[in-house]
Length: 186
Image (cartoon, rainbow, N blue to C red; front, side, top):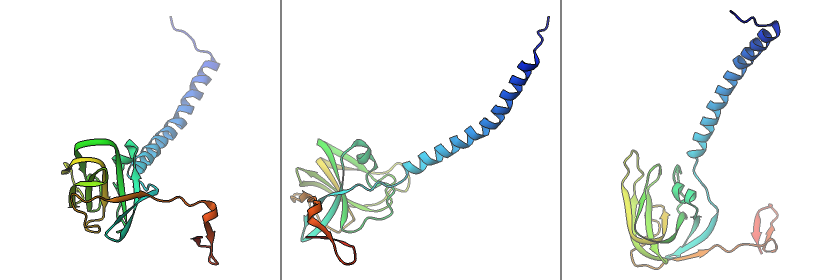
């Protein structure tokens, strides 16, 4: 015995099939766009606010500070350059021994300085970018912080105490504009 389908059931199936023919390609395009967007966002360099300064040998370096696990993991990855007066300070949150750092997906050479309470414990001079995995792992003997700078700019040595300070915050009353509408401090 065969069941007969009414005209309204056939129209409903036909409409559903037509809807799937339209929504299927739209869903596919959305999946491709979402995947591309996620891939793009994961390979963008992070630019953190400058919140600290390092003064060393009469030079001042402006430092971005990485503190969260995501910031610490991304570091200076995907950057194509780093100004000679800039760097990144990684605050590890506690003291670690044999601290591993690597240059995976970092496009520029760096000096890697391992610090314990602002005293230099290990310096890796001119660590090259890593073109392919596995990347070399650079270890600091002990660290609570790690500093990355352009190679050779600071001439930092093991045993030195570094002067790293928070950048002063300017209040609205301390800032004005000049005739060219540039910000100036009072």
